[in-house]
Image (cartoon, rainbow, N blue to C red; front, side, top):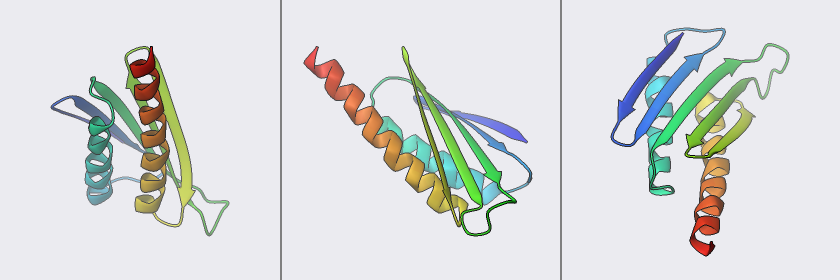
Length: 108
């Protein structure tokens, strides 16, 4: 199941694998990803994939977030006991990547 929402400068597409109808998780993912716009001023296209892994009982929630900015793509994949923790871990990774890109562009 895939849903896409556009707000201001961020387009967020959320895909749920092996499950459906997690509205609160989708809203949480959209809000978390929309916060990335403060780290990069350009237009952001984001794709959030949430998956449930059957083979791991402790870290069985997987989040993968792909952020597309002009001329760059950033990907973060994290697993955790809950979708919220996995999303937060991905956001931390993407924040570092976007800050690094912004710093490189400033120094050029």
